[in-house]
Every structure is written in C-alpha cells, then in structure tokens.
Length: 197
Image (cartoon, rainbow, N blue to C red; front, side, top):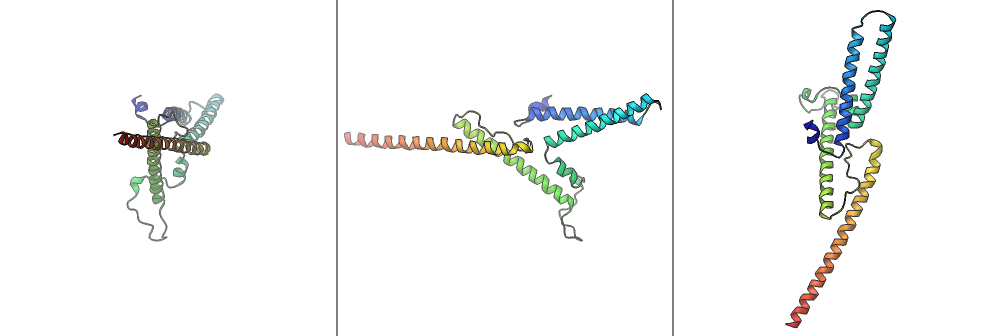
C-alpha cells in the first residue's frame, strides 16, 4: 500500500501491522456477529456454533481493545470521557448552570494536548537527528517517539534521551575546545609572521 510509504515515524511498520490485524479482527467479528444474528436452525450443533462464534467475537474484541490501547495510549481516556464528536461542540463556554467545564471541553483540551505533544516530539527528533548528522555521530539512543512507545517503555526512552543529551554535550564541548585551540594557534602564527616581517 502507498499509505505505508507515506507514514512517518520510527515504528510505523509495526503500527500499520497492528492496525491491519485489528481490522482483520473487526471483519471476523462482523462475520461472527452476522452468523450469530441469523442462525440456521435450533439443533445442538447450531447452538454450539453460536456459542463458539460468540466466544470468538468476545476474544476478538479484547484483542482489538488491547491493540488499540497500545497504538494510541489515550484511546481509553477518550472512550471513558464524552463520546460526542468534536463537530457537536457549538461553543467553548463553560456550563452556565454548574460553572464547570463541559465534557466536550475536556475532549478538545485532550486533542490540543495530543497535537502539542506530537509537534514537540517531532521537533525534538528532528533536532536530535540534525545535530547527530552534523557531528558525524551514528544513530543515537532514544530516537523513538514517546507517542508510539508503550507506557512501560517510556522511562527507558527518557533515560536513553538523557544519555543522548550528555553525549551531544560532550561532543560539542570537545569541538569547542578544539576550535579554541586552533584559534590560539592561528593567532600565535599570525604574531610570529608579523614579527618576521
């Protein structure tokens, strides 16, 4: 698919595979549900088939939820909050009666926070890659987006990024010292040349 080539990010192939798997499970669930709705008869074998299809459907639902939760960590927060679409929001005012923000505002705030996080991650990764390529460094640790990393791996990525920052700082300090040394040598050379003239 061309969509796979257009997708950007460190783990995009893995995410696309998981989405394909979730889609195939959804199709199977729909087939099973259709079988469950339209039984062929009331024999024992038909009842067993219905029970098996119901169990398969429940299993597929659980696996789909697990995959979606891994691909998009905020999916549970979105489903637990309001299920209204963003297009249903008429205005951004607080509830006049209770003085509290409506669930739609929470949904918009979460969407804005996710957009800001995505932009921040993209800027960080671009900056780190650009600096490492300018310094002729190989692939640095911690170059995975936190958005695509499961929650249990985020602390590991944070430590890797801290190591990357220390490595880049050391390399820049070495280059700065080398440059200062070369400038000192050059100034001494110029002084010696002026004396000889």
